[in-house]
Length: 149
Image 1 (cartoon, rainbow, N blue to C red):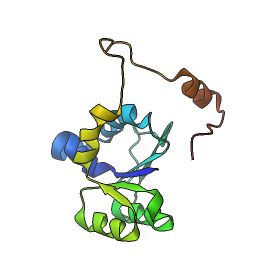
Image 2: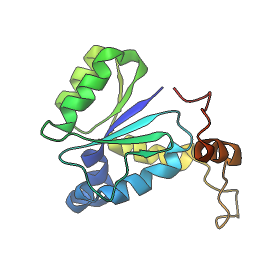
Image 3: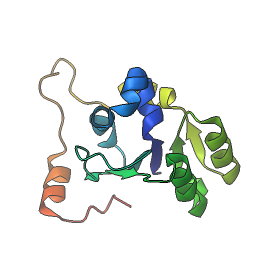
Image 4: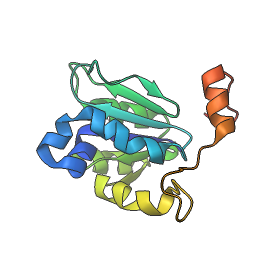
């Protein structure tokens, strides 16, 4: 099931008001978790950040431009609401996405689940993180991944 995440809300949980503006750190914090997901879209308010790419494997980064991130998130969910998990701290957005049929998590719930949901390394082997070599080879060689939507 794909996730759509309000980037500013997640940044606020990760680093307060300054974290909400530090888009590079938000992307970096998400990447280990994204490795275990099929599709994640991270949406930030405002114009593109030159230091942030548009795609990192299963993570797509979108900037809302003149619209709000909430508008874009709502638009993503409207097409197939039951297939999305929305991550937001915005009550109105969360309520409207739930009414449409999407699952909703708060950014705090998402972050709390990272440690249990993402085995980034073998016990006692923190310096040698697990890497799915086959996935990375497929990604860098441009081969389609049958598990990706």
